[in-house]
Image 1 (cartoon, rainbow, N blue to C red):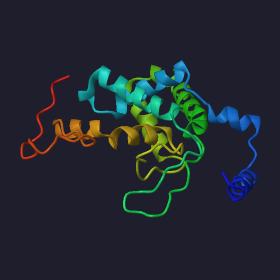
Image 2: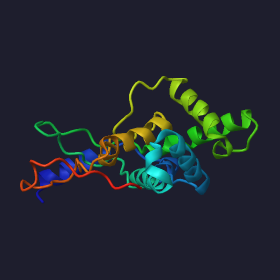
Image 3: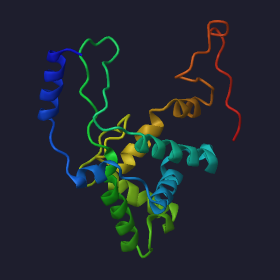
Length: 194
């Protein structure tokens, strides 16, 4: 490493905003067992019923794993066909979720039950619709969770994934896998019943 590289590194480090202890704690927010139970109750209403309980649990696990693995400030490289680097990742979306979980439970308490998961599926659907419409109407589901709306983030991560496409077409399309050229002229095989 030469002197110029050292000076560039020091200048870049000086330009970064200082992190407080609360920033560090906020970046490592994890899901509580109650929040995971809420995600399961959410999945029962917003995901296809053909997934069954195991498929919904896999979707919840995928969401929790994605959020836990999120690295703030990570280099994102550049998009396909784009020579410009994308900005690094922002703060974890998880820092905005606790208040949204609390809001779901508060809506349940207003309906006479202790938690969101204790609501009937019909009542959960009404609460979810309200969460998607107020106060900032969700106009599209993000492909990557961004923290703006927990419900939209959960649905967006699932529905933008390869599994959702397979379920929608009831075929093993495997969008993110390569089937090879040998059988590329054949239709994808049907999914096995769950």
